Image (cartoon, rainbow, N blue to C red; front, side, top):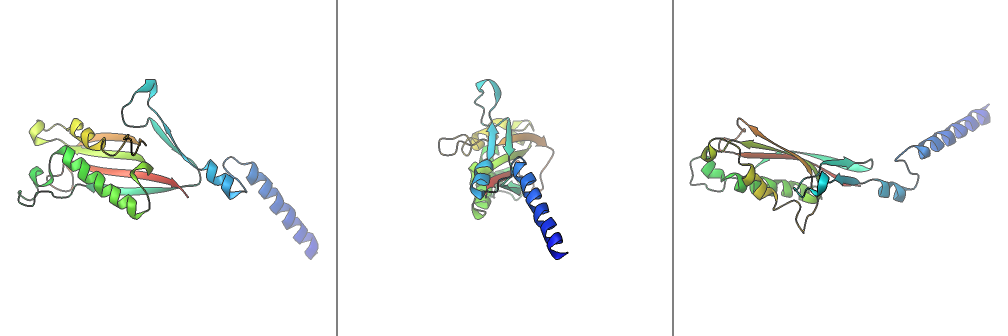
Length: 181
């Protein structure tokens, strides 16, 4: 009886292994799995060089990291608390928020090149008739993405919001990063 049950378990295990090895993305060889696990970035159509990806695919075998929204640090402690002057203009705040994200990613063993998705929340700038300063955000963004040192482009959304949690903040950025393990 024991050998019959044991034999059935061995046959069942062999069958499960055979089914799994035929499944897409599964590899009995860990090296093969590592090669199959990657992040793919789809460029924008028609040779558009805008510094974002149309889409990013994160395949199996990749760790995904969700970073909370980051604000820029106060750069002018003499400015009134909660003022735009305390944090700087949109470009300055974008650079500050992205440097904060860069620091968080480094603590996780990641780089800005591992960012696959970004959401940028922009408050209307009082000096720009309360409209979001998209050009200022892009000037800061381009210092981190689609550069010679860091060519990877995340997929990205940018939206204007009524306000952020910190008075005077014009920019908050959240990202998702992914890296093969």
